[in-house]
Image 1 (cartoon, rainbow, N blue to C red):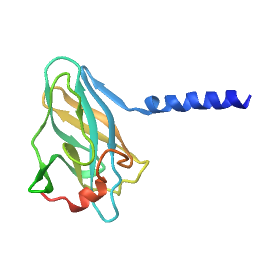
Image 2: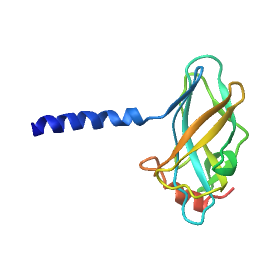
Image 3: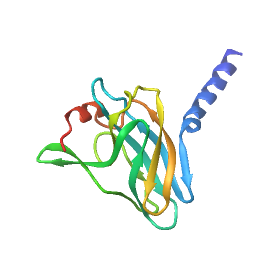
Image 4: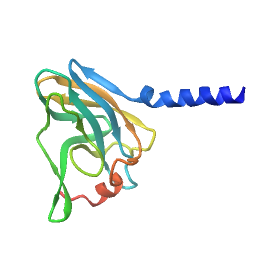
Length: 163
């Protein structure tokens, strides 16, 4: 009896990951796993990461975003320059067809929330509207979670970033 209970519990837990995955669609545009990292104390900005793909049709570009969680949202990229990781705003983030654009802490593209209306705490969530050049707006919900094994600690990167 106990073995059967443990077996059923293991089966239920193994299905929890896919069931909790967030996916948003607009025609052939697919957005998955939107998340933000918690904002460190006394820091009024945070980063948001998403995975974006276009299954078929024309490529597109992410050209903007907005949320009630912050005063501004900028599209950013990060790159090593002279041995220092630098963050800089970009006008758009290209999303090619049949390619997964993956945003993760530690480098590369992300959405920078500035002038947060409240600190982002692990377990929180908030709405975010993504704006694409061709496909228009997509409303999503962003979960706040730790960076985990996604790369460098986002709080540390945000604390020492340079534009």
